[in-house]
Structure formats: C-alpha cells, structure tokens
Amino acid sequence: MWFLTFKVGSCRFNVKVEGFWGRSAPKPPLHNLPRAKGRGNLLNSHQPLMKNLWSQITGLFKTVEESSSSNPVIHELIERGAEELALYEGWKCSLVCRRLTEWLWHQYGIWQALPGEVDETIDFLDTPSCKGFAVHFHKTNYSRRDARHLFDYLKERVLTLPYRCQISDTRTYSQKDWVETVERHYLKPKPGFAEPSKLNQRFGNVTIELTLRNDAVHNLKFRATSYNDHLYASAEDFKDLMQAVLE
Image 1 (cartoon, rainbow, N blue to C red):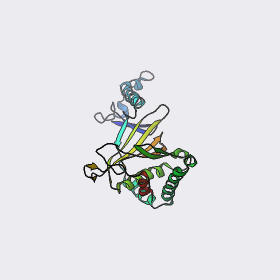
Image 2 (image 1 turned 135 degrees about the horizontal axis):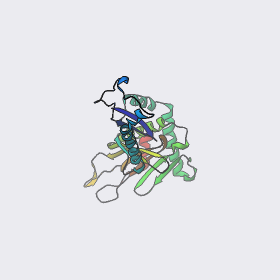
Image 3 (image 1 turned 180 degrees about the vertical axis):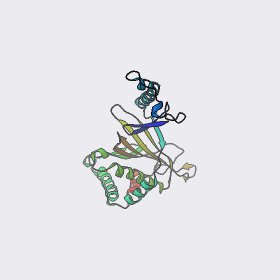
Image 4 (image 1 turned 90 degrees about the vertical axis):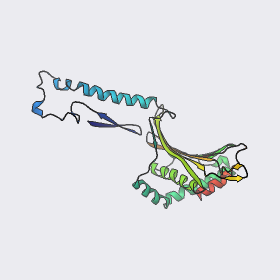
C-alpha cells in the first residue's frame, strides 16, 4: 500500500493505492521479476495498478468539480494546533492586531457619519435584522495569517459578552474559477431572560466567516442577525457590540 498526495486549490488529497507491491504482497527481488520479451512487458504487468490509481484520481477531481457550499468536498471542525495557538497569543499583543482593530473602529465611525468616505477595503451591512461588516483582505497588504488571527480574535472577544460557540467549522468546495474555503465561527448568546417571558438575544446570533480562494485570503465577514418576534426582547445596539469587540 502507498499514497499519492496532490492538491486542487486549497484541497490536499491522499490517494491510497493497493496493488502488486502492496503490504500484503511484498516487493519481489529484481531477479524474480518477469523477463521482458518485448518493450513495455513489465509496464503492462502493472496496468491494473495504474488503472486503479487513475480511477481514484479522476473520481476525486469529479467530486471537487461537483461540490458546492451546501455539498462541500471537505467539511471539518476547526482545530488549532499548539504552534498556531502560540503564534496567535503573540499576535494579540502585536502592533498588527492593534492597528487592525483601531482601523476597524475608525472606519465604523466614518461610516456612521460619512458613509461615502469609508475605505474601499471595507463594507458595512445595515438592515433591520442583520448588521455587520466585510473586510476585503485581497485588497490589503495583510497576510493570511493576520486575517486568520483576526478571525479567531473576534470570536474570542464575542465569547466574553457572554456568548457560546455553537460551531467552528470549515468547508471547501469548487467555484467556477477557483476552489473556495470558508472558515466559520457561529456564536449564540447564553440563555437568559431580558424581561419576564422575553428571551435575551443580546446582539443576535453572530457569524464570523473567513473566505479563501485558491488558498489565498479573500475576505472576512462579521455579522449579527437578530430575531424580531414576540419571543425575544429587542436586540441591543450593534454599536455596543463593535465597541465591546474592538476596544
């Protein structure tokens, strides 16, 4: 048994191949190999192995090609290793972290007063039930690591409000011209009542998404979605959420 590793965009695949030289059939010494009577005789003896290999590879390409956001080729929970966590802890104390959070708060202030003057690398969302922002990292000089650390930092800050993390996952699927990976933190307020018989939804459910295209960071989205029905108390002001997360 052996493995062939290859990448499609940000997807890495390991193809397991079993054949003539698999674990159950040890590789024979060279002097026991069949003597070639004609060109390609030795290669022809391995045709079943190669056919199996290409069958697996073409099958994986087809799976990637037919994938979508609702049917991703890869869907996994987010797990950060010890090294990445250590880098993140250092990043939180860095000048890059401070500049990013101060810039976000400053842009939010500009958007409230002069919406047409905000930087081209950021957009804000404001509807009755959903409020948030999107940072277009592909238009900035920040690295993928900086974007990912900010992604995790926003989650950490929301958890202090207090919120709980419903799920942190990553999905990879094919788009027309690229392979897209979306990392997501989905957070909900801890259960409680704001007033008799009214559930406290705080700022609503918070979704943080980091999108990569062909393994390059594209954008980061942060949004709070609130309910507007008789079961829930009114959502708190989004400005207070921004202040709590960024200051």
